[in-house]
Length: 313
Ligand SMILES: CC(C)(COP(=O)(O)OP(=O)(O)OC[C@H]1O[C@@H](n2cnc3c(N)ncnc32)[C@H](O)[C@@H]1OP(=O)(O)O)[C@@H](O)C(=O)NCCC(=O)NCCS
Image (cartoon, rainbow, N blue to C red):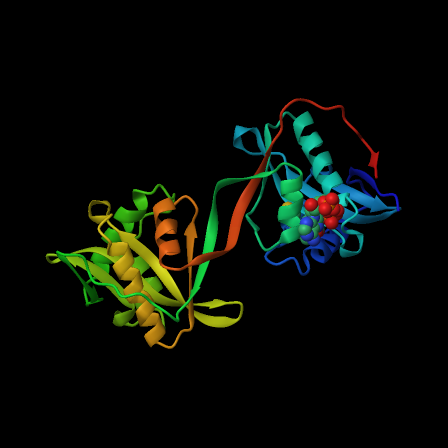
């Protein structure tokens, strides 16, 4: 069947668009269609549609604002009945052409794309899009055979004691600020909200590495839901820069994994970023494997193109 591609016109209402996007996103994991308010603020030339006769069956929504001359690909979707026929590829190529005509230097996905969305990652890779900024990673391991862990000479491990809030915040901020992860600094109020106020808080879940009397590293044997199951979560692993490379990350996390096992969890997950290379190496040594990558993708737009107002496949 022939499908034609063109920018949105008055024949397609916001409701039609919202319905098509919802149908496309249905069953596609974490993909969420843009809100109605977002759609109402898009101009017609920011929405490319693929039509079967009068019926829209594929859509690509872009936002032509943004610094560095980078346009945003807010949503791309093809009706489930019209997939694997080249429409997604066609829509993306047309979107790239339109962005190039408007002198944008790149198109970037508006949100991260999950590696388990095989169709989206397959399409993006096939059409020359590349992950940018370092992907966020979800790692997993079973809690069956856990190694032993002795604290290195000069250090000991203990659990949370009243008043450790300030030490936790100091260690977390020192550790993450030195990694340029872009997050804001924590205050004791953040610790209170995320830890002390949580129904899961138990001083024995929060571990510290101590040098002399000074806490210099921490990790938490926390809890999460993964694929509908309660699993252990290794949370906020942090060692201050002056005490790194001494094995504290290893011992803190082995102790936390042992704690999770003692609490009855059969598996553990953690969330990290590809940019934190030494942390990712440590987690792999600890037996974790990557089960999900989430990345923002970008397509550089070099050179010009002849406009194709209507194209057909
Ligand atoms: C992603 C999506 C737009 C692809 O649309 P489509 O019209 O089926 O894609 P195409 O037919 O143009 O496929 C182009 C290439 O993408 C890849 N691809 C598409 N679907 C795939 C799938 N299910 N599994 C693996 N690769 C896939 C293939 O490499 C394919 O080339 P090939 O058919 O020669 O092997 C569609 O699956 C969809 O709407 N998904 C839900 C919404 C979504 O995830 N949007 C995010 C996009 S950034």
